[in-house]
Length: 175
Ligand SMILES: [Zn+2]
Image 1 (tube, rainbow, N blue to C red):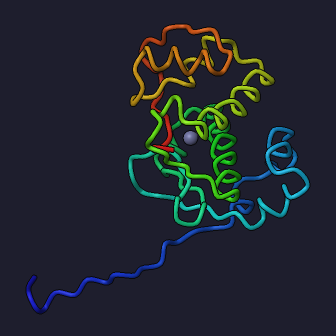
Image 2 (cartoon, helix red, strand yellow; image 1 turned 90 degrees about the vertical axis):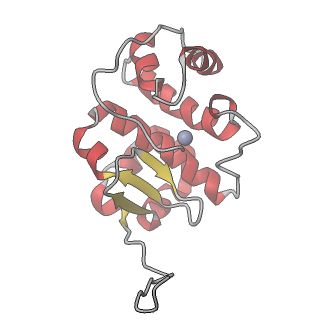
């Protein structure tokens, strides 16, 4: 590398207080069931990073903060966004418990941490009145094919309804 070039090796990842941006989640029953009586405390200390990349949502495997693509936040379906945040909060809890979020011994649709996170999101989707077709649409991502969607739906007790093209751009990062 040329001698005049300097590259910083340690930079600050800018994060914000989750509760400053995302309001009312501490009153959602599904969230209270995730964190129990620590709900308010966890949401007050949880950090969120807004990323200017074409990604969706994920949880940092370094410190467990939530990462959200600003483009997805602006353009994603609002119900999908809500369910994705619930899904990611389950990963936040899993991280706090020391669980391995990216266990590559499993495929995405069979990974226990993913199935658990989707279970909570689907339960909330049902409470909101989403039907099986809409839930399958929610579950469909560009990185799972139809047979994987079928397996995921089955694991979650959702009737598999083939998904045509998605109407809106959405989805999370690899988590
Ligand atoms: Zn996930």
